[in-house]
Image 1 (spheres, rainbow, N blue to C red):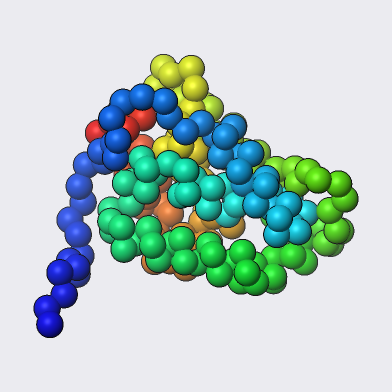
Image 2: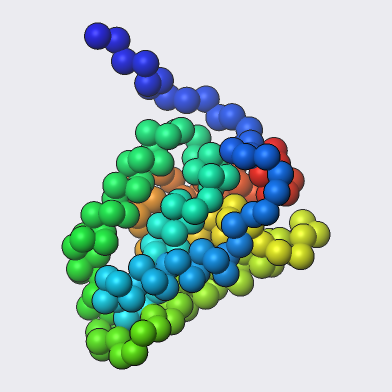
Length: 179
């Protein structure tokens, strides 16, 4: 039986997966990521939580991966594994620090420094292109641009080069969902 999945897909311009309209904003994504971190018992909401929430909520983000649905599915698989134990080795320190693990108290998992920086980077990117609000693609670009964050590590494990994704997003998008 012949596979209908292409072995390698040529670079294609980024396109919106849906018509123009309301966009998923980083604040909404951060809220979902915080719920995920609290549910998982994590001390902080890290960049991998943000990436997972982005993939769940934003079809434009899913369309940004040049490997198509199969690549997104593989990435979501790695993120799901992390949710059920893959990330246990990360529990020894907060993202971006050597601080020892301290159990979270209360119902809020604050953003890690790297996650907060990504949210700020998304806002800066939106302002640079003249938008008053950041999109999910802005946040994805900010996550991919930080080679040391956990989201970048998950991307690499899923076979996605974060630096290539960041460059593609910087070159291929005039605005949210544009190409």
